[in-house]
Amino acid sequence: METNVNVALAEFRKAMGMSQPQFAEWLNKKLNRRYDRNRISKMESGAEAVPAAVRLLTQRPAVFERTVVVAVANQKGGVGKTTTAVNLGYALAASGHETLIVDMDSQANATIHLGQNPLRLDEAQRTIYHVMLRRQPLADVVVAVSDSAPLFLAPSSLSLAAAETELIAEPGSTQILAEKLKSLGGRFRFVVIDCAPQLGQLTMNALGAADYVLVPTQTAALSMMGIPQLLSTIDKIQDRVNPGLSVFGILPTMFDSRTSQDKESLEELHALYGERYRIFPEVGQATIYPRSAAAGRITLEVSPDTRGMEIYVELAKSLIDTVAREAADAT
Image 1 (tube, one colour):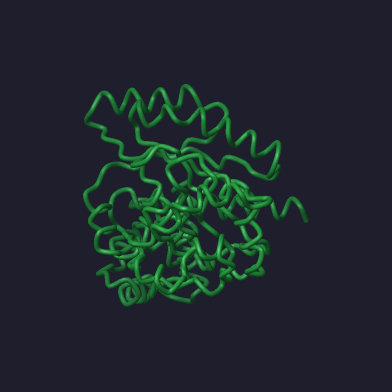
Image 2 (cartoon, helix red, strand yellow):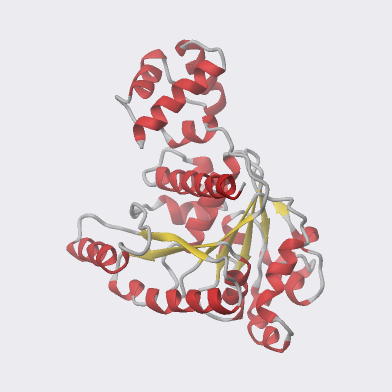
């Protein structure tokens, strides 16, 4: 796969009509780096991996028409759902596709991670709760959250906690989010939903609206115990509500290669689910993830060379390629 990336980089440079020194200068201006002709030559030949930031800047966006909705779900909390949703969303946006992150968790972790104030948004009635249950148009709550990519957010707040009980009384309650997303009229190419850490009404809405589910799981026994229940719920949603829903894959997170427990859990994950589902390369532990969240910054945007960021870039590329391929097959 890496060879294809190196070749694509060389093809991009040639299409731009640049020599390797000119291309290095162009990248340096765009990314604030210090590449030279020698580094470009190594990247193009395969002697050196292409950094995530360079991949994002130089890959061409695929062309397809429909809005694609991805739910990032696991009823176990603390497994990296928000980190995954935010960085995957940014990678999709940086690839040239307008992307909306929908925060469906009353803890508002994605909202805070993206530099927004849930209390002020709640006071202004501009959250996903007011969209779901107070007839606020979804387009009216969407806010831009990046200066470098077309990334947007439908924010959450503590008010969303009330939605779990209020939605039960609503007719067709599991389809409300799907209807609200349709009201955007195809404005976004991708929608990434950061789900709540339980299989309640909010997560059911996310699964009812989604085309794909991405399941992050910490490489620890307790975190993996919830996967069978989630997969069973997805099967029921497919049968009763959303036949187009499919599992995009499982993403191991917070992996520590130094511990035998993590290694054994990763092996067990592959043994239990590897034949039926795609299991992506594991994302390791890094202190920069919680620091970025606390600072309201996207790790992939501010520190794209951080170890593990290349996995989110590959996730985005894999999703884009999958959708483009399915669109071509349908045509």
